[in-house]
Image (cartoon, rainbow over all chains, first blue to last red; front, side, top):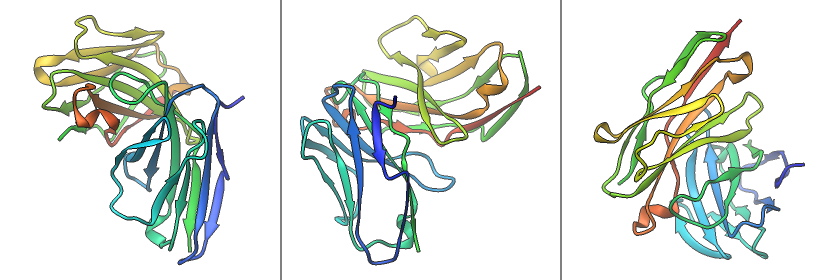
Length: 114
Length: 118
């Protein structure tokens, strides 16, 4: 059974709308992350959280807002969607944040903005 | 700022042979951690192996091993006895040590597409 669950697997949205990407991990990890992968681009770091606290934010836009209701949840709210937001969004987790902690990834949510 | 570079866009090898994928990195930190992941055709990202900068011995896990050349800032991934199912995109990644602000993020290279042919 997958230990990092992302929902939905596929998502289609219209420009200007708002969507929430869900991520839950059952590895008992204290740190969670969001990454984005656009077509033909490397994995791009977005956010890191530790014990529900934001540690690093590399997104230029405030339209992307992580939401952590529990230590094992880190959802991603995206507002005012644009076609350029089309990408696969991966959630990841590690035992703790920083240093040698290994990240484990969920299966991703593929977002298409029309 | 940290940076990871994979110059090989794609590699094709015959099954049961050995392949090496290159990766060079840039960091100002004396302590850092290097990782290799693979992304399968289904999109799944799987952790393979890691190397801690303070360890002189090259890491080995199953048929994956690393060629860590610290003076050259290089961390090559070696896959021996390749199998068809090793066909995937391989990503090199780096995270700086806990004393650095760069430790909060794992930075990835652009990836190398490996195709293993029968």
